[in-house]
View (cartoon, rainbow, N blue to C red):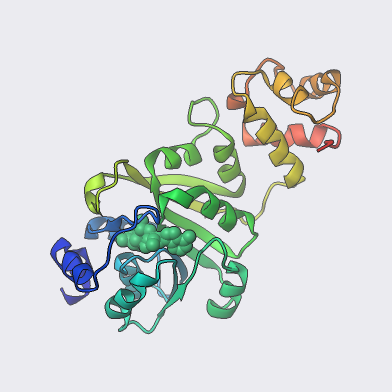
Length: 288
Ligand code: SAM
């Protein structure tokens, strides 16, 4: 089928060679060449003709094309200017696609949603460049944007850390951060063979359903406590919090934990998001 040429490694090679395109490792360029995975990502996003989409890093437009066929409008942000003429060729026929040349970390996403996507709500869909996965996710979910969900391909280990709950070795501050703002779910694990060039690591697609209402807590204090708690994973929660420099007496922290029925000898990896919320509400103001 004409529209699906971008799934064919032969066609991908042909077009990239014609433009003299060279893959950049430092920009995390591993392009999808498997139609089943592209469709799976878009299916899991429940993309309908009403949806406004932001794609990060369209590459040569493989995922973008599938999104364009299903969504109302797609704005795709690409940092690499050598891909712009290629995108022009692969996506030029879709009038619901707009390519923005820039670094997603520097772009004012709120303004972009306001000006180009009717104010949202917006779904973010991407095969992310792995070298900046966490800053991108942090920017998107922290910024109080009008986002409905984020469906992204990331390194498998990162997806597992984002999805993890208390009790396992994957659970850490990234898990608490992601679970504070969203409901994460790994939707599919992906072999290296679906990419060109093939990366060294395995990947997974994770869906983050953004929470409409966030827990009622001082976020700044909450995340400082989470950071302190996980800064020394092997220490007890009492020791991590009392030696971090919050300038709160150990005895005060002990009393607060006991009042909350939290064992002072437990470690951060066994505390849930709700436990951290209760701790931040109970401790006195922090001195940093
Ligand atoms: N979406 C394409 C696909 O699935 O075949 C390409 C995915 S590739 C893993 C990541 C893409 O993100 C590349 O096109 C790369 O140039 C782009 N990129 C890397 N860093 C970026 C940044 N800071 N802002 C926007 N795009 C970026």
